[in-house]
Amino acid sequence: MPAGLDEKLEPVYQHVLRRNPGETEFHQAVREVLESLGPVLVKYPEFAEQKIIERICEPERQIIFRVPWQDDRGQVQINRAFRVEFNSALGPYKGGMRFHPSVYLGIIKFLGFEQIFKNALTGLPIGGGKGGSDFDPKGKSDSEIMRFCQSLMTELYRHIGEYTDVPAGDIGVGQREIGYLFGQYKRITNRYESGVFTGKGLDWGGSCARTEATGYGTIFFVQEMLKARGQSLDGKTCVVSGSGNVAVYAIEKAMALGARVIACSDSDGVIVDQDGIDLDLLKQIKEVERRRISAYAQERPGVSYLEDGNIWTVPCDVALPCATQNELTGKDAETLVKQGCIAVAEGANMPTTPEGIRFFLEAGIAYGPGKAVNAGGVATSALEMQQNASRDSWSFEYTEQRLREIMINIHRTCYETSAEFGVPGNYVVGANIAGFVKAARAMVALGLI
Ligand code: GLU
Image 1 (spheres, rainbow, N blue to C red):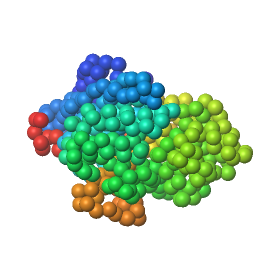
Image 2 (cartoon, protein in one colour; image 1 turned 30 degrees about the vertical axis):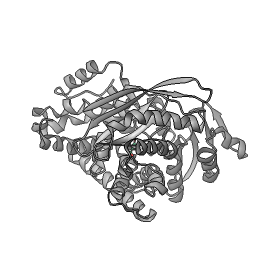
Image 3 (cartoon, protein in one colour; image 1 turned 180 degrees about the vertical axis):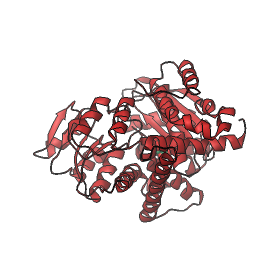
Image 4 (cartoon, rainbow, N blue to C red; image 1 turned 90 degrees about the horizontal axis):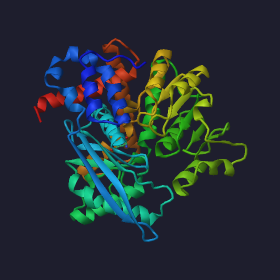
């Protein structure tokens, strides 16, 4: 049974369901936020008068377009792309582009909706947006990726800009894709407008530590959650789902802080390496060779590869879902807690199902939701925008220090807000309320727009 909604919020949620049929991930993301907001309406009656919740659930603008491109055999291919410009009360729309066959409007809207609150939590001037395409980069050649990106940008360029909407990467979109997208934007507009995209390469306007930021930020948040409970990462056993950019740099920072990371995964299977993951080998396979995680087990004796395996069956102290939405179910949550897991932090967006979240909260373990935990990525994007605006570039150490401070602040804000609303240590309530209140106050101030 889902938790109840406040009687004022139930009709708002029903309205969202009716207006957005079939978009189940979007419904899930909205419900999770609304479940936290009952007490906020009591404290801030102006939010109800101004219909802030109804307004925040409706994107300011949604763009859906065709992306035609030619594959290496000369065949014409058609994909669909999206950019959902959700909320710009705090700054230009900001959020990544996702290329994955599962992408449809409901996924982009859930991501764009969460991005509003995540971006608000960073304390930096960025609104919320998200985009993507059902294009599957898996198995595509470099020139196919380039042609696809160029075609996509030939439409998208007219909707974005450094003061309007600033995309970045997400699943399936890394520095290579951002290069092709930014290159086409530059060509069409005849402007070297660095601030229109983040996640750029270091040679062409990117920021140090942006690549590492989501993973590192995740671990900084874990450190703070554990510190609040008188614990540390040193000596803890960690399991990290995924093996993309977020997972790799979460593993790197966790290991640097003395944790033992023994498992990671991709959509085909799981590797368990009891000696601790060999990070150089993992990076070589994933970042350089772009191979599947099964190659790791082939290269290293003694590693087990579980084809189609469930990573949450591997016993650990700290679980870090860093792959994708709804990858950790209620049953997985039960298994983790039963096997001694004391902390869960989400490097991915909405990786835990509502049943899983409820289980973690009821079990009283430290549970950090994605919109707080993985905000270091977009926060460092905002730092990249700052550097671009001042035509400057900061050192790795300085940028990482700024990221660390931002994550410590986000943790403190979430913790204090949870305490203020009577549920100390409930980071779901803390993140939802703190992120919402910041965006909502700006919306009230800016009037009915
Ligand atoms: N895609 C990332 C996220 O989910 C980063 C977005 C950005 O840097 O704009 O927050």
